[in-house]
Image (cartoon, rainbow, N blue to C red):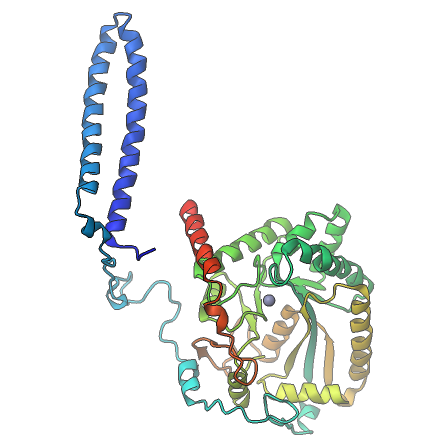
Length: 445
Ligand SMILES: [Zn+2]
């Protein structure tokens, strides 16, 4: 396939006009046939009508013929020519309003504290041995600091379920997802202090269609109580590197409409723990969709390290680790995800996670000198506390928090393991995706 040329566009327009004309002519022919029936019975009025119709049909047919002539009499090389459609430079695009600002931009030229392009330019990517924490450095904290400042820790059980990876959608559903969601209902009811987060509506809606009304009511109750939280609400957790923004929007609409119509749920937090790198397009789209928060995860280890050193991440032995982790962030609110791909599919995993963690929580919370509040939580619990301790309204950026512009590509999780192969692998499927999206978009217009 060549590029789409201005001639292609012109020809497509003419072809569609031709189609219209031919459809009209078909209708006219039918009318002629009907009128002939009357004429054969000696109806003068119908004879006049017939004359009008024939004249009209003649002129339409001539127009159609002209269009065909024009289309096919063009020199072959002109039709083949790959003249790209004239592009108007972005800065010349007319914008509405008096301030010459693109209406899609909320606040252009906003002052940013960290610009990724500049940061990456300055980084050496030397990958020194980080000691105990292999990708970092030895983190220390002032032992007295937490005497004055209370540490809030939210331990967040979750299960990430991609509808396509090593198994098919149905095999994943029957082998694991059904178990995860069935157990979610039973175990959250059994352990009222436990919480759980889930994102992929594709699987969730499959499960929902199979459970009885009683179970549906129990799920609604767990959502109301804030024990079970659905975040992002997309059909999937979309890739952010190869994906066209139309596909991102489309899968968000698909999942969120289902959620809203079925459960009346409208997530306010985005949860992207598995995309291999992150694009500002996703953040932009979520903001436009009225999301207040988002959490990302797969960022180049060296970038994480660079941001952590400047505390620009806003992200006993265990408590020591938590305090060290808190040192990397600006706030004294800590988010500790406990989960992975397709976890919590078996009941005993729930039991072990709950009983082990709850014992630690009860111990830490009972020691006032540790000055820590630790509990199971969801993304909303975490962000609520984060806004609260920063004394700002929910969804408002704390004034001291940095603004970052740019993207988090290319992702590397360690050494020189760059996750860029998938940008170009399986080109057939990537192309197929785009063609399908194109047709879908065309039909929706
Ligand atoms: Zn994934």
